[in-house]
Image 1 (cartoon, rainbow, N blue to C red):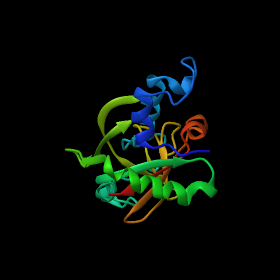
Image 2 (image 1 turned 45 degrees about the horizontal axis):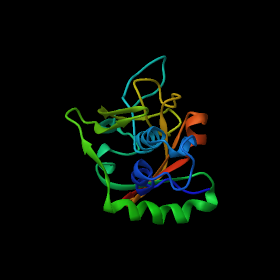
Image 3 (image 1 turned 135 degrees about the horizontal axis):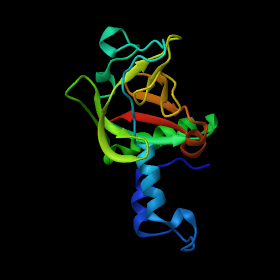
Length: 175
């Protein structure tokens, strides 16, 4: 299966690449939804029902500054596609996705299914997993789990099985 690339989105707005007009992938609205969901990292910090949530400055596994900057973004659905998808994410740096620091120690980024920029924060579960998500306990259905990170690469997946099936595992390559 092919990885998502920003250039695919841009080209789909102008040219359906041989698909019929009724094919879902030929509709710009579909690609806008893919781009919006694929480029979003969402989250807020909260404490609810005894779930352990740790603010980044209080010892979360990663600080918000780790995600601040310009990123090339791509996704994959099977592990065998990861190396190729990393190369494709780096190639997207010519049109990077920019994550900025928010005024209250969060990140200015997109939330799932919302084209608006929001200030969102990291949250950590009691078992040490790090999530990005709305004001809910870590691991909420709308969260993304950060699977791994280095200085140059962050790998995340949607907690929601349907979103994960549609959008795959997201790779953010630092530009």
